[in-house]
Image 1 (cartoon, rainbow, N blue to C red):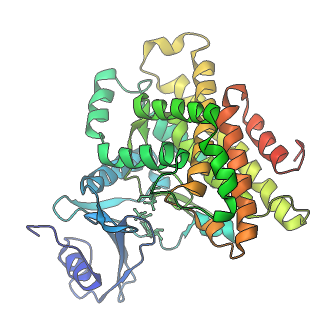
Image 2 (cartoon, rainbow, N blue to C red; image 1 turned 45 degrees about the horizontal axis):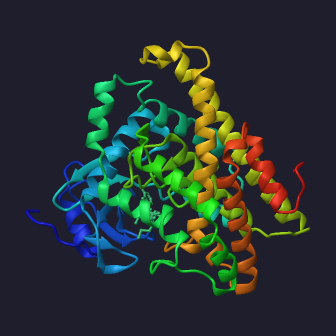
Image 3 (cartoon, helix red, strand yellow; image 1 turned 120 degrees about the vertical axis):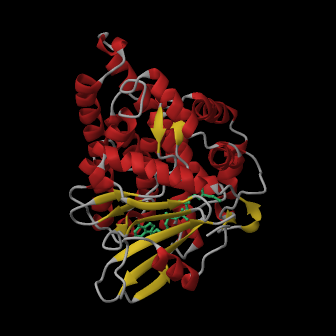
Length: 405
Ligand SMILES: Nc1ncnc2c1ncn2[C@@H]1O[C@H](COP(=O)(O)OP(=O)(O)O)[C@@H](O)[C@H]1O
Ligand SMILES: CSC[C@H]1O[C@H](OP(=O)(O)O)[C@H](O)[C@@H]1O
C-alpha cells in the first residue's frame, strides 16, 4: 500500500493475501473483525484449508471508542510492534510473535492467540489459572529489569528511551489516569449513585497531592521499558499459558506502574465479586485474587533478584542495600499506581466490564465505592507498605474481612 486506508473485513483479507510467506497459494481465507478495545481494529484471518490463522491489527487515525473527534497518532502501531518484538525476545513464551509491521498502513501482523481467553473475561467467570502468577511475575521481572539501567549500558538505554518516546499516548494516560478523575472534568463518566463519594475525592487535597506525586513519577522516572497499559484486557490466558498483548502505550517509565496496573485490575475484579458478602464462593474467589497478587509479587521479586545477581551491568549494583531499597521503592509505587488505576476506572472515561456488567446500579455503586476506598487507601498509605501482605491485608480490612484472609 502506498498510502494509509482504513481496513474492513474485505480489505484486511486482501491485505493478508498479499503478505509473503503467510498463507499457501490455494489458501481459502476468511476474515472476522474481533476488536473489542478502545482504540484499534483487530482482524483474525484464517485459512479454512489448513486452519492457519493470523491477526492483523490496525491503528485507526482516531480513538475507536470516541470517534473521529478524538484524533490519535498512528505512531502507536510502531511503538506496539517494536515493543512486542523486544518483549518477545526477552520473554518468548509470554508475548505474541510479530510477523510483519507496515508503517504506512499502521498494521501489525502477529500470532493469533484465539485459543487463549482475555483474562478479564476469565476472572468474571471465576476461573482460576494455575500458572498465571508465575508467568506474569517472570514476565514483569524480565521485561522491566532487562530494559533498565541496571542491565543495559547507560547509552544504550538512553537510545532505547528515545526510540520509545510516546508523547501522545502518554498524554492520554497523564490526563485519564492522573488528572481528569480528580476534578469535575468533561471526560469523566460515573454512576450517579457514587457521586457523593466522588465529590469527596475532588475535595480531598491530601489525596490529590499524593496522586500529583505519582503523576510526577510517571512523567519523569524513565526506569525501564514499561508496557504502559497492563490491565486484564491486555492479558490472554489459558490453563497452561499466559500472553501479554497491546503495548501501544509503551515508554520508558516507572517499573511500579505495570505491576500496579495489574494489581489494580485484579482488585477491580475483587470488588466486582461482592462487597461485604458472606457468600462462600465469592469470598473464596476474592481470596484467590489476593493470593494471586501476593504470588505475582513473589515471583517478580525472586526473578528480579536473580537477574540482578547474574545480569547487572551497572557497577553500583554490587553496593549492599541498593537492591532492597530499589524493590521497596517499586512496591510503594506499585501500591500507589494500583490505587490510581482503580480510581480512574470508576470516575474517568474508560471503565471496566468487571463492574459495568453489574446491571443493578445500586449493587454496582457498592462495588464502585469499595474500589474508590481501596484505591484511596493504597495511594495514601503506600509509604507504610513494606511487604506485599501490607497491600492485601489493607484490601481485606476495607472489604470487611479482617486481616487474616
Ligand atoms: N494476538 C491476538 N490473538 C488473538 N486475539 C487478539 C490478539 N490481539 C488482540 N486480540 C483480540 O482483540 C481484542 C482487542 O485487542 P487489543 O490489542 O486489546 O486492542 P486495542 O488496542 O484496541 O485495545 C482483544 O481483546 C482480543 O480479543
Ligand atoms: C480513549 S483511550 C482510553 C483507555 O483505553 C486504553 O485501553 P485499551 O486500548 O486497552 O482498550 C487505555 O487504557 C486508555 O486509558
